[in-house]
Image (cartoon, rainbow, N blue to C red; front, side):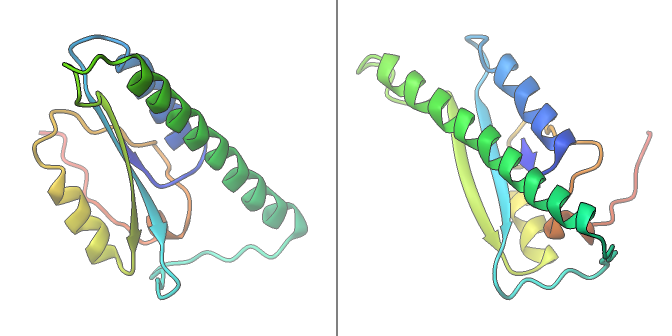
Length: 136
């Protein structure tokens, strides 16, 4: 799961966590966090109190979803025997300074068979990513 934040990414994460309950599935979750130097290229500014509170609310719900994921990982690790030392769910945070670093991090996941990401990821990291859709 490529987690940028927002409702759709949380839904993708919840779906992936359900998939990971299957014994043959391993799950890697990469959360992208903008560094202090991160400068989004295309930013839409909405100046309203409702939007600001929604953004904070969205971040809090994102943190709650990630906290649930971490709890699931701890639960899984405590139930694994010594023979099964490798976790089936892996979570990592990538602090990125630019969109190029986001693309490099995605390339590092090239051995994955399936990528899940929300339809409309939110946040400053996702705001400037433009990917051409290929239906072929």
